[in-house]
Image (tube, rainbow, N blue to C red; front, side, top):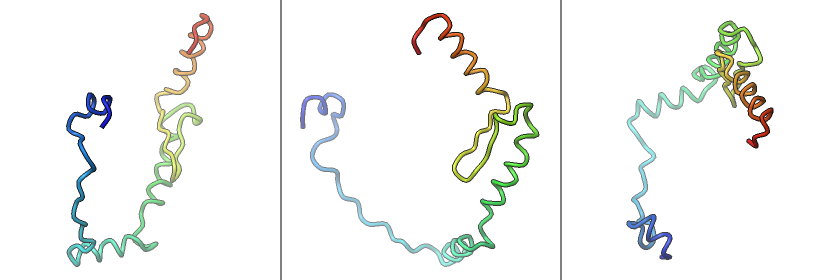
Length: 98
């Protein structure tokens, strides 16, 4: 172990210990529920995203501040993005580097 590791990670000596493998099987009802949720009938996430995507624009005056997809949810209903860009412009106007 090098000195940096010894200073910042005093309990980290040697190789990480091996943990026993986790059993992949759970109770039968949990496996059944997971199987159902993996089907199109059980997967409610796309419907939830669609509903959220419809409701978010109603909560703000600037629709560009909100958006929802399977990969991202931008919920700046209080115009946070616009306020941050204005603050950044003020900083840049005073000659300060970001």
